[in-house]
Amino acid sequence: MARPTFQALPGTRDLFSPDTDRMRELVSVFAEQAATAGFALVVPPMFEDVGVFRRLGEASDVVSKELYDFHDKGGRHIALRPEQTASVCRMFAENRPLVPWKAWYAGPNFRHDKPQKGRYRQFDQVGAEVIGSHDPDVDIELIALAARFYARIGLHRVRLMVNSLGDAADRPRYLSALRAHFEADLDALSEQSRATLLVNPLRVLDSKRPGDAALIEAAPVLLDYISDEAAAAFARVQAGLAALDVDFDVSPRLVRGLDYYTRTTFEFAADGLDAAQNAVGGGGRYDGLIADLGGGEEPGVGFALGVDRTLLACDAEEAFPAPSTGVQVWVIDTVGALDGLQIADEIRRAGVRCDRSFDGRSMKAQMKAADRSGATLAVIIGADEASNATASIRPLRGGGDQYQVPRADLLSALRATLGADADHGSAISSPTSTTTRETLES
Ligand code: HAM
Image (cartoon, rainbow, N blue to C red):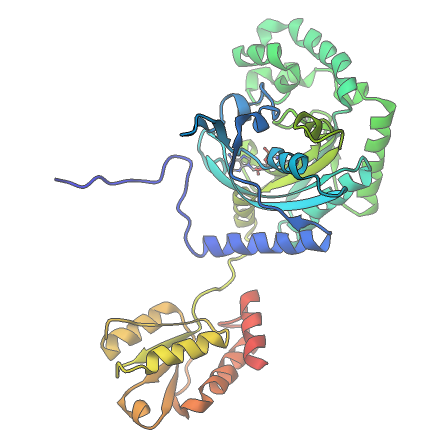
C-alpha cells in the first residue's frame, strides 16, 4: 500500500540555510539595537484565550476572518497569536512590571490570510513595546529604533508614513462625519465596504478595492478632528523625527489594520516590493488596550516589523547577504581509530566550524565531501600521520601545498592559515567568523 505523502500547508514554508542564517542574523541585529535602547526580551506564549485578541478589532480582517481559533481539549476557546502586542499587554496586566516597561520580542504569528509572496499564514515579526508613558518622545524613539534598524541592515528604499488618530474621545465626531460622507454615496461603495461601514467606518479607509478609491480620497480627514492635546503630541513627534533626521511623510489616510490605535500611528513601506505587500513594519499608540485587558489606565506604544517581508525587501535591494555559517575545516580520517573524533572535537572547542565524514568512507569519498562542504582546509589523518602523531593540512581553496604538522601544533597552524585567509576577505569574513578568529587568536 502506498504511503501517504505530505506537503507544507498553504501559507507555511520550509526554511533552509542560508535563508535561516539570514533570518537569525536579522533577529540578532534587532536584539542588539533593542538592547542598546534599553529594551529587554520577552517571550509571550504562542496562544492565548481568544478574548485577548478580540480587542484587535471585530471589524478588522485579523479578527473577523484570519484568526486561528479553536476549542482545546479542556474546552477553552483559544487562538494562535496573530500578533504579539495584545499578548505583551496581557503579560503586563498579569505581572505588573515597573513602568515605563520596555519589552522587545521576536517570533512567529498566525493569520489565515490569502497566501501569496510576502503574505503567509505563519510569519515572523520582531517588535518593541513601551508601556506606561504618555510622552511623545517615546513614540519618536520607537520610530527611530525601527528606522535605524532598517539603515543598519542596509535597507534604504523604505518610506516612513506617520499619522495621528487622536484620542478615543475625538473619534465619535469624526466617525459620524465619515459615516455621513460614505452614506451620501452608498451605491459607489463596494459591497464589502458597505458591510464594514456598519461595523467600523474607519476601517473602510483601509479598503484596497479600486472601486472605493475615489470615495476614500474625498473622505474627511481625521487629523482635522483631533483634540488640541493630541495635535500638540503629534507636532512633537514630527519635530522629534526631524531633529533626529528620520525622514517621514504625514499620511492623513493611514489607519492601519488593527482597531486599538490612538494618537501616533506609523508604517514603513518598502519601494522594492509590490504595493499590496509593501508594508514591512508598522505600529503606533494604543492607549486604551491595556485597560481593556485589565491592566489599568496605562498607555502603550510600539511597533512590529515583518521579518519575512523585510528580507524580501532586502533581496530587491541586494542588501543584507546571508552570513557565512558553513564549516571552515573538514577532518578526513582514513584510519578509523579515534583520531578523527578527537581532532574534530578539539577544533570545535577552539570555536572553529568543523565537520567530518562517517561510515568509514574511502579517502576519495571523504575528499569529495570535504570539497562539497565549502571548507577552507582539510585536516587529514592517514596511516602515516596516525603513526607519527602528526596531521596533514590541505588547502581546499585558493591553491597552496599540503603540509604536515605535529598534532600538538595543529590548532596554531589552523589559526595561522584561517587568519591569513580572513585578512584577504575570503572564507571567514562574516561576523560569525570574526568571533572565530578572535577565539583562534586568543
Ligand atoms: P501589523 O501591521 O499587522 O502590525 O504587522 C506588522 C508587520 O508584520 C507588517 O508590516 C508586515 O510586514 C508583517 N505582516 C503582517 N501580516 C503578515 C503576513 N500575513 N505575512 C507576512 N508578513 C506579515 C502588528 O502586528 C502590530 N502588533 C504592530 C504594533 C506593535 N503596533 C503596536 N505595537
